[in-house]
Length: 469
Image (cartoon, rainbow, N blue to C red; front, side, top):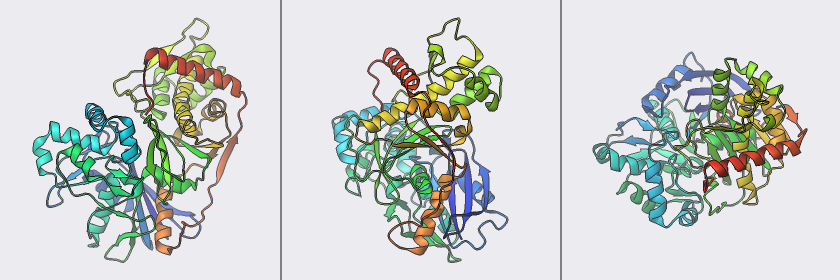
């Protein structure tokens, strides 16, 4: 048996699986505190709670999939200096813009690390720390990512710790490790922080980070999106659209993207390939806000949206309820446009919220296509994928078949699959089936294209010159 951990923004989830088949034997969950800055100690407490009661009995290997980009700062004794700044903390937006300009613009960054810094990435948070908290910056000797920290903590708990480790998938989201060269860019690290700090050793995809005192293998682990790609066993042509609290659009690719516009972050995946990705701050949280506005639950919101036509008779929402990362508008607010007497109904409003969320993600799929990365089908995952209107509207707006895998903890499953790979060795991870709950074909892609076009026009009018990144 093997175990996979999903240490996300919201919670720690652990699944225990048969290594040969991926069949889930047991699983558990414990919550994380809310916020954009959280003590890493809370992640360990949640892991201990989730694994209690013998959850890991008989497990031979484990791996951690963790939220990307979070900045965990350690002093010279590996003690936490301050709370971790998470990916969704946008405080470093000014520092991100400074870093882009200092290196000579977006093309220079894409050439260096295949992405353009935005507030999410670790390097920008290091610049913020150096400028805003010089005392904490002076104490910082090592910087690790959330999955790195939990992997090391598991090994320290079992006396198997031999130094901090990471993997290429998670390291590629720092803006100071290059998926192009496979090496740290210490010059960019120094540019961000003002001096060098210790960074984790990058472990190979199927290698072990170490073993616990009890002999359990601890695999490299990876970032959450790379872990989800492993859990879903995606191949070129498959584009994943993840509808969690935030949104993500990603696929696998055989080479660096090199998107000089900065629209697509050219991350690495957890297998040796690349993981072109775009992320949004607003996904399922848009539907939660809509349900609250209309005083219904999510099932009631789905029913209301289903009773309105595709395009909501012109009612269009820009869903930037918490600022936005894609497009890069950290201070933006939502916009509702095209209101008439005919569409001033709860059903139309529900539909506009659903379609606004999806049209924002359609912009991400279009950005992939501009880099000759085309979707032949979309895999729709996350809690919001359960809504029938979300599924049907996604097929029409994206214009391709939408597959909805059976609900599952795909980040944790991907981490477990990586653990099974490290345990067995070999050139590729084990073959695990991914059951599909539904396949939805577009029913009116023409109307979906009209809705998406109206959305793009509103973005241009409300935020002229906005660049999708």
